Amino acid sequence: MYKITSHNLLAPAVRDILIEAPLIARNRKAGQFVMVRIGEFSERIPLTIAGADTEAGTIRLIYQEVGKTTMEMGQLKVGDTLADVVGPLGKPTHLENFGTVVCIGGGIGTGEILPVAEACKEAGNRVFSIVGARTKELLIVIDEMRKTSDELLISTDDGSFGFHGLVTGLLEQLVERGEKLDRVFAVGPVPMMRAVCNATRKYAIPTEVSLNSIMVDGTGMCGACRVTVGGKTRFVCVDGPDFDGHEVDFDELTQRLKAYHTMEKEAIEHWKEHQCRLEEASRS
Image (cartoon, rainbow, N blue to C red; front, side, top):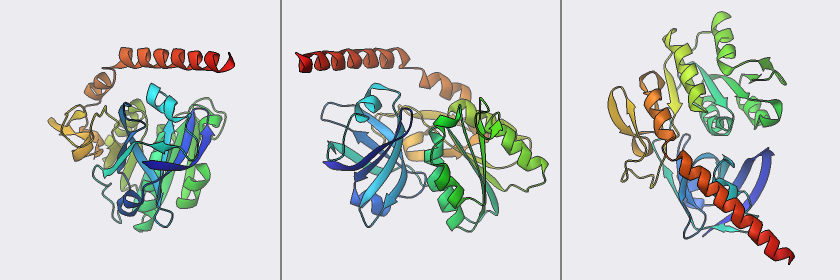
């Protein structure tokens, strides 16, 4: 069992959780993830490791309540336990002193790009970070991103904070002002990562994206997370999650992410109905 030592709300429906997992904390590297199972009969979900404290023996996960399982996790309190936390899984992000890198996070992806930005800085790179969200209240870990970056640029879709527009607009600004960008790392919604890759392709800037395909076991056995990269089938859990963004088949990835949309919606509705019954029973 894995005990929760901290559980906070970062933004509407976005949570920051610390879990006791000393072996994972000691061995994890930037870009890796864990498979989490709340209880004996819960589904497994992949969550990127956003950080670790080796002395405390904890790992940090930043997640958004978008499905039945993450909504259920959002109700857990400090002292509660998780049935399984398996990892670290996936290949670490390939890092070296590239020169000047840009780390781009969109929405919840900002929490996932944070350890990559930190590792890029530790490797001696000059780090530009670009973070974006739909609105100001959904921006997360801004202070931490600023601390690890040589320059932090922020955008919001509605213009409520920073640049009014998309993260690609800020990326274009860096290029236009003459910055020589040696590599780009991007994590976020598929449309955002696709747009970033379209922008960097015309400048021939190598771009790594972290894919969030559907997973069942996270160890390469089920094949549910398969994607096409460079015309070849790859498994996100063991071959990734990082891939050359210019070679990812984003159309296929988008379609595969919709495969269980109806069932996911039904699971949320059934779970909410169950919660309502529990509340009514507690009041009676």
